[in-house]
Length: 194
Length: 194
Image (tube, rainbow over all chains, first blue to last red; front, side, top):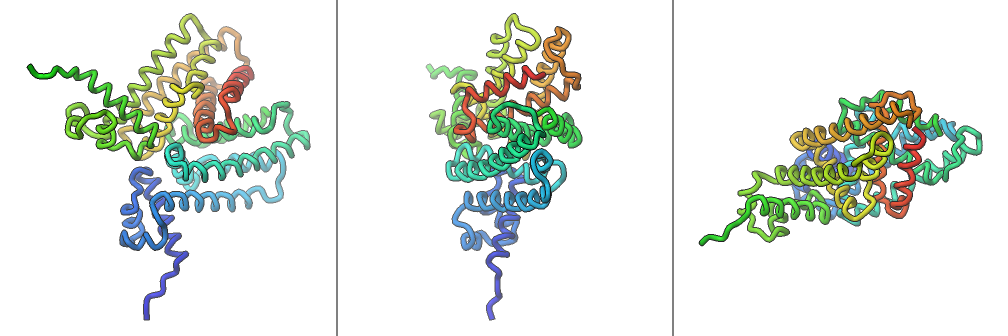
């Protein structure tokens, strides 16, 4: 009887291996060969699951985002407006080992997205979803009188997300300058000033 | 008589070719072979100027930073405090084609710095210089009564630079959401609120 291989399970293993290689060695090093080796599979087997390297990378990004979305959904349960916004944005900072890895994966994609349109399209779609969620929570916060700013809330959302991206990046590049406690404090005081 | 080749001139050509390849095709694609091809040189010749790919990339980053420093020095001539700070930070945003290219180079290095310690060390040293300059200008601005914030100015500097990095990144990834005018306006209103 042939060995039964669970296709979805194997696919998840490949994605997990891809994330490990990207985070540890950089996106440059995430070749099909390196990912297969990390997953303990032969190079040829990878082709049954993914057509090329970019498809593996895209799937790893989407997989990571699904996990983040599920976590945030749990985190904001029962919250609205500013309280929910605070949780969403804090969750996007690398405040623990899991989110540190997620942020490294994200940063790797930023530079590749600038060169590969197929990745850029996914990056834009995923970013649009987060931007819309942040904007909606800002509108709830304004309606509830929790924030005072008269600025266009689309611009406020973009500014907050830029701060989150910049803080995330800098805390990984310059951990001596920007520790986790500082990171959290900067975001919270920025929200309090809205 | 042998053809006289100006070593420094040839080195600059290689760096310029490296920047072109990184910005156009991504840092992944910036192999020694691709850089040599872009510079119109044979692969072997590159070895006379640089020991390996990372040395080429590092030199391209340093070369870009030198150009930025020279431009900023001209731009802040005769200015101090908040006025000088505004020029320094605005200069760090991709508000024209030249700075768009510089920002793409920078973003490419972020992800590679996370994986290659040798690049990370240079990234940290270069970032420390800019951080110190921003902090010094904030201190001048406070002494001159141009800003009201009671926050630690080291933290304010880090927050401003995080915003600049995040805005720069997002304006390249999502140009439809964050145009150059918006980018400039967000930075200026952030400085006015200090």
